[in-house]
Image (cartoon, rainbow, N blue to C red):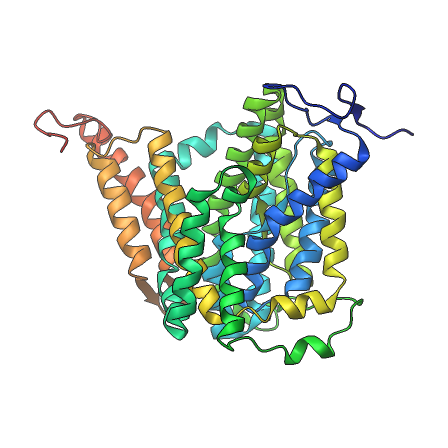
Length: 436
């Protein structure tokens, strides 16, 4: 059986304004080169998640590569995407690990993957309309925004641990983003980490003691999730994880629509498959000690820069990630990234996650002159940023979970009450309101 890609033109040149479609490829040397670019694009963000959460980086890299190949298979090799570590899971993983250990956090990751898979099956059967009704843009934007802003204290704690190194790292991120065009500009976070790491080396803040002892080749550290049947207290960690599914749904749907717009509108029919694939990949990662996965915007940037949407390049990237994951020494090097570097890069990165939520509002022209939109976003953000906690008996909801629930409840409650009283729709602008 031959490979599923046809050669684009002569396989060497891509004309201006022409793209290489998912079912096409360039010559294999060029395809491998573009695959390497995808590895570089995903690497900075993917390794940061395990560093920030305490998971083994090699394990996360291994499962991100496996997840990417699984994604390509499930989406029939028609949807180019790299499944890297999801930043939306950082806050609940950190909280669960602190209270019940890393194995409880892995339980949460598996639960998120299972719910995402179930949503994918429903979308595959019924379409995405029900998602739009449950989670309109004002709700989706609020949830994504509070996920990022809820992490602000974690960024601050790392920043103050080594403020000089953190400031150098942050400045490197800022300058790279605006001083360079193309791929380098899109990799500003990764470049910032490299420059910050060099600064930390000069300042004597990097500890290499664990690197020498790590072997070059070997299986990464694997760990199974905790069993809530034998320890019912572990069920209490799940409420903080489940709202993250809404962010993963938004990321996947946005990715599919973006690829469809530039390649083939029929790709939109793969939305359910994409959600199923990401859900399954997240479950597999959580079952072995890795971080949850999601489609990566960094790799969309590579496709936009190269105009190559070939899934062949993603097969290359997935295989390379698996190979990197089988090197404990590489994982040990990644673990040497010091707190100052993390503080600088996460000050920008966590803020960017929050701004993605704001972008959802802007892209969908959410009108904040309307009462329902005002209160939905305002209440959800304050609860999420302030890390409010609601406890009752053995149940506790906090931060992301409580803010996400508030966004959904406030929106639908205000809409329902207004309809019941027969007055003007709560989503309509009041005649006396003035937009300032």
